[in-house]
Length: 151
Image (tube, rainbow, N blue to C red; front, side, top):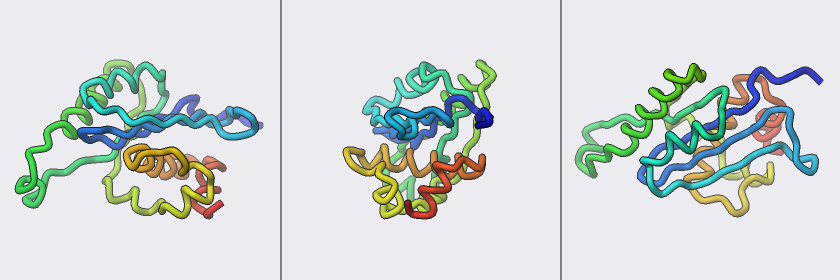
């Protein structure tokens, strides 16, 4: 088996409560892929929690403020979380990527359920998993392709 390009990949869905998903390509626990998720209620701790996972790649869902967003709330935490993670990745030399949050809609609830990664997850964790699956699929990861095929 060839060694994966990245040892640890972390995906983040930033918000007041933030979903984080970590995956180690090529590693297994009880014949299952090594996958960890969590919801972090205080966004200010997210950047440090992510860096403590010792990632090689961090992917964060983008947050855009539109006229509709501005009417609902100022919502600074998503932008601050995004910027802090990007800055720490730059400082540490960790690859940082991002994509529009709407992309996560390409990974459906049914896909996550069929892949067995739905139970016990909060909505924030599932959104981070959606980002994770998409970034891993771009890297041609077999587990991510299996999720996208619905199984």
